[in-house]
Length: 487
Image 1 (cartoon, helix red, strand yellow):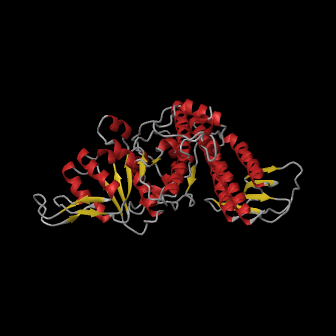
Image 2 (cartoon, rainbow, N blue to C red):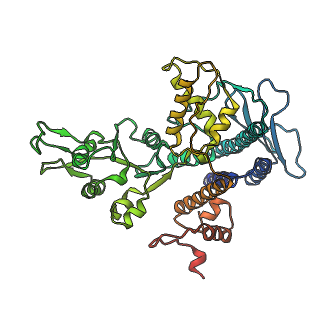
Image 3 (cartoon, rainbow, N blue to C red):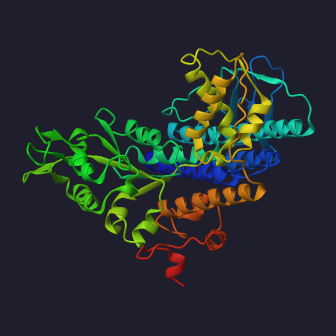
């Protein structure tokens, strides 16, 4: 095999591992905790088949443990057991423990490139997240059963492992949040416009900063504008600036946000509240990179990346004539949907400790534990205000509590509905994942690089999923589906 053929082969291996990672993330959404071992075992088997390896093992072993807390192994029939791994990938977790993914080959040594190893590392992280999520779900179920039975609930000690992670203070490891983070990591290095979609309080500005800080513009300004907070008479001058004497009170020249963000990123929050006359000027800046200050005739040129955000249904606003269709399609190049708090309740304990640690010094408090019944009560709420509402609830509880144990106040929030809400949530997550894969693959279902291959599904199975979720290819988009063209 020539050098070129070798690299082509390993590129194909890495691509297959990446598709396996996407398939695992999709299949694990909504999976019951008891199904985790089956999912992990299947992933280990598929990994060995792709790598032509003999044994694959995922295990967790803390420093003071004698036996692994979790261990799953797949062995090829007739393989020799006890051989040193050709490759071991370690994944550190909070609390000092770690997971290890080990791959064994009969010939020994590690024949894979660094790119293949990176793909395996991403797969290992997904498997670890799935295992940890199942363990958290089992712990939450234990808490619910304890609370419902009326038994005494012991206080949970402060966990020093729960702290802000390194992704712009976006706290959590839930599958829904990880999908959004993966989308940010995918689009950040490009200059594409990003549309952040989500309910109020889901952290849209944090994600906008994450896009900026992982882009080539990270050393240039990040400028934020809340379109809903400015009156329509001022938003034009706020965005584009004005010259002296442009209107009553304009005693001096002022630069707009576009000029301040030149070379960097401009975050337009609540873009759906932008007045119609300003929408036309914004479209021109996006298309030509040019604008005029209010009261000026000279055009100025800027190089700005746009990250927009809204909690409104812009497609509906577009159909009603409240939002320009051409501006919508210009902004909605790469949409990222941010999950509401009720769809990632497994992140709630980490968020609670984060808010406690951030505010306790300013409030002259010192909390060392939070009882399980507090977490159970928080889990039961519907959180219409999402993470912002949670931060307010925790701060109110910190003020209300007098000792070292956090106690909720007596003001109850809206309660979360029953199982029907959870079922709809899981289906919506799966629908979003399928639609994202179709969009990335330009709606191809057959042929090279198609969406069915990325999702690990048969093309007919993917078509059935599209029919089930009501997903349709947008008008004017050609799927280039060879199977359909030859029919």
